Image 1 (tube, rainbow, N blue to C red):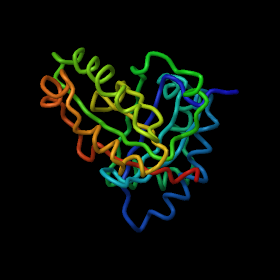
Image 2 (cartoon, rainbow, N blue to C red):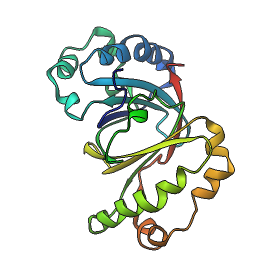
Image 3 (tube, rainbow, N blue to C red):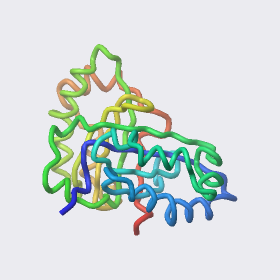
Length: 223
């Protein structure tokens, strides 16, 4: 079975004017996503719409590695876009447009279950930064204090953490969930303010979220 998740991730966030939304969504679903899925190294893709936070739209591409974006096949589509892409690209009509390319930093390896997993129905995505001098402590506390507790929440599928190699801020965490019931449930509500030794005293006061982060997104394509 071909892997559906690898070491790279591309996330495109966008807002578009209301008058373009219907055609924008058709373009993305009918042309753009299939086009990108034809590129070697693009393992899977889905589109999401924000329930909390923003920007409103998120397109998520699972990549074999971040190098996939730099491949000749990908760059050819950027240099030779279709007429519909020229018209509807979020770079053209977007009132907000964020393109972040990532490489995975947690967990260390892609398990077989993760590699074979489909795109999650719901994702909660944090985009954050910390002062460089606490980078190491931040990563250790996140990986060893915070995330093991999240995995105990019913309906919580997995967490993956990424470092940005193109775009900003430096870090992103993708929490995958079975449904909005997880976000709204008691387990998540208890996890979010949970006090752990290093995180609450030495990390959280210095961590800065980007505008719109954390965002909660429901998958809208494929259904």
